[in-house]
Image (cartoon, one colour):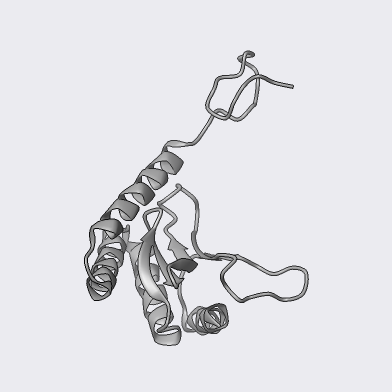
Length: 159
């Protein structure tokens, strides 16, 4: 059994062992800690909801053009088709929650330097289809056909 931990360096320079979290992953964890602290300081439920929405829209506004355009469409689809889901930031990503628990989220391609954005669903989403179902969808653009599929998924996820 190896004595190395997730954040330690393996003894062999040739080793391909896990060397810890990436800079992007550490940044996401710091974002999440800030989000939790900020939410704890808010006063009323209405103030929390209004500020959470402002935070989500601001985060979308910071995204590169292509991701921002997709995130804006995803936000519009989610709020129109699942109004019971509340916008909030989750690890620095726009997310939508039921009773404080994230149901779905938009991950910009820029967030973890990937080639496509992602619409992801948590275990709170009600998308079960037998023994296997998708929990994330790659997005390269939001066409009318994609938007219709997103609306269907979001309605199902919200229950």
